[in-house]
Length: 149
Image (cartoon, rainbow, N blue to C red):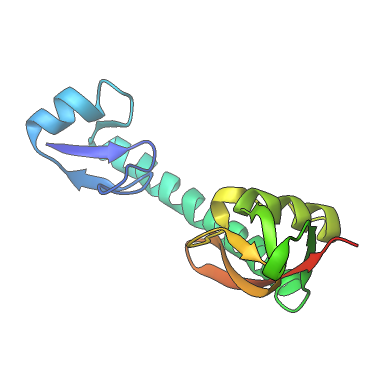
């Protein structure tokens, strides 16, 4: 069965793609949920427009992500935290804390899901934290954790 995707479907394709799927998958999953519609010659012309639109939006989103990356790469973000013995933090610094600090200090909106920490930060120091704003834009943000005065 040949269908055209209306939205991005993980593991299947992107909006506007003309794809071949099994009859059952198309009839029972994609079509009832409104994720795709049947392919016809007229619909394929419409799909071309959807692909062009997606590419323009993707280019604009990538450019915006690159601009944000340029503003954050060499500007450290400072987070103050309460410290106990051995310079260990009371609690930890999470991606949500980093996103809030970036928003407050640099006026850049980051979602905590865009910040990739393997484990929360539990000691003072300087850390390189990877941030992924777009599929092709990933950059490190320097986070400096200092003791509360």
